[in-house]
Structure formats: C-alpha cells, structure tokens
Picture (cartoon, rainbow, N blue to C red):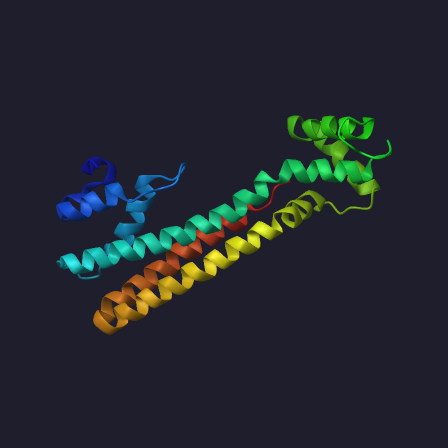
Length: 208
C-alpha cells in the first residue's frame, strides 16, 4: 500500500510491517485507513522510542483482534437495521383488519404497500405509527420487533464477541509476561478504541 494512504507515520515503519498492514484481509465496506489508524493508535508510545520487529508484529496482531471486535459490534447494529423492513411488515400484518395475511391475499398486499410507504415518506411513517398505536403497540414497536427478529443471530454474534474478547485478553496476558509496559499501553488504547465503537453503535441503534 502506498505510504500516502497510511499517512506520514507509515514512513517510519519497517517495509514488512507496511506490507502486512496493506495485505490484511478486510470485509466489503471496511476501510484500510481505519485499520491503519487503529494500528498507529496502538503503536504510539509516550517516549516515541524505537521498536523491535517483534513489537511491531505484536501490535499488528493486537490491531487485528481489536478491529474484529469493532467489526462484530457494527454487525450487531447493521443486522437490526437490515431487519427493519421485515419488522414493519410484520407489525402491519398483525394490526391488519383485512383478514388473514397470506402471500397473495388482500391483507398481505396492503401490508406490503404500507411498508413501502413507511420508508418512502414521513406521512407514510406517521400513518404506520398510528396503526401500530391503535393495535396496542408502543412508539418503539419497530425497534423492538427488529431486535426480536434479529435475536437468534445476535446471540451468535454475542458468542463470537465473547470468543474475540477472550482471545484479546489471552494475548494481552502473554504480553504482560514479556513486555509489561507495552502490554499496558496496548490495553489502554484497546479500551479507548472499543469504547468508541460501542458508543457509535449505541448512537446508531435507534431506527425510527
């Protein structure tokens, strides 16, 4: 990866480490610069002193572990957002007064049209919210239904998060034994990075 994409800090890195950062696999939608920025946040030290190749590799491995945890946090929110249309459709079917809502039925067709209107206009959203209210649902019905539909997969993501956190903690314990000062610096930087990710997830979790 050209140094320009990593910033000025990349020029001080060993060539092998620059290549590792450039070739670390990322998922669609993820930015290389975000991965690099996390690496440099972990790489910085108060004294700015030189680092061995072993330290650089250690920091890169920590970056991968933390980036994966941030990825899982994002996936949890994205999943709920993805299921929002299905949640709206489900709620419209439940409050329908047109009879049993099976594919091809009037109730199903009406619910489908109302769902499209919900996402296409503020008026459609307000009408849907009023229909849900009359059906006995709270103002947060869409968020709640989205979460309920996503729950089985969210539980799978939670298990992945737990495994990723254990891997990170295990990695840091090994560092404690070899590089106590560096391990503590990475631990603090990791806590900051994860806190930012969770704060962003919380702010983006409201769907309606």
